[in-house]
Image 1 (cartoon, rainbow, N blue to C red):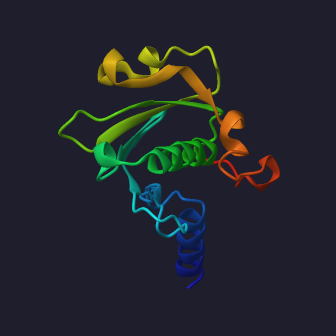
Image 2 (image 1 turned 30 degrees about the vertical axis):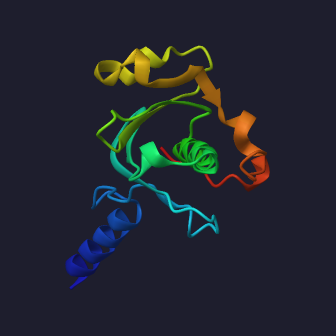
Length: 150
């Protein structure tokens, strides 16, 4: 009986600490759910140590407000993953999966982070985007940033 109890407590503790099951929850955000008049949904379909692959149906038909909302989603994901900078590579014309790369340094070259996914013509902007530049724009305050996770 004591062994069974100890085993049950050990399994429960391992599950609580995230040791028993791999993390399967991925990032998702919906503009409609946040009260926007347009409908964009971001779903993380794959996660690597410094990259997230995001599916965004309708990416190529987004409006200017939709593009700004996406920048806030990228910032939110970077913060939640514990990074201070991000860079995005837009999807190919006939696809809806984009790649978001993360770093904690403004001087990191995006091509290094994107690795084999790198395509210079599809990288948006110059260099890494600091999350601090977008926190206020996105209505996030530094003290309201959720606990960082990797």
